[in-house]
Image 1 (cartoon, rainbow, N blue to C red):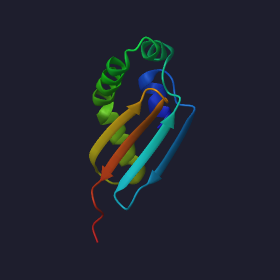
Image 2: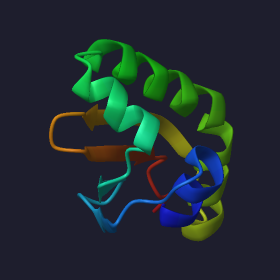
Image 3: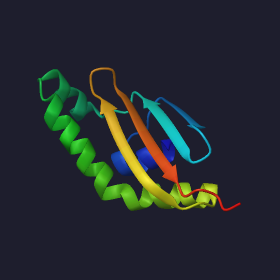
Image 4: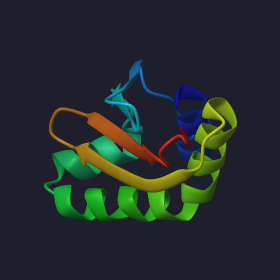
Length: 102
């Protein structure tokens, strides 16, 4: 996730935590990933605009996020959700994986 953020946003988060949350879900929490201009937007009171821009970037780069998780896990990603708390500079990426065949 850190590498993807660096590639897609020009700067990576200071910390990242990624874990399975059950057999078919992966959750990544990333902190301090806002760029200087994003921090300025937040400080100007443009929180919603900042969220909208981040979501647009996430949507535009979704195929890359999915492909990397699929390559690492060997499983197909069937759901991808992204969110950000702009006040605390915490982002999350959630990937739902196709259930493994028994």
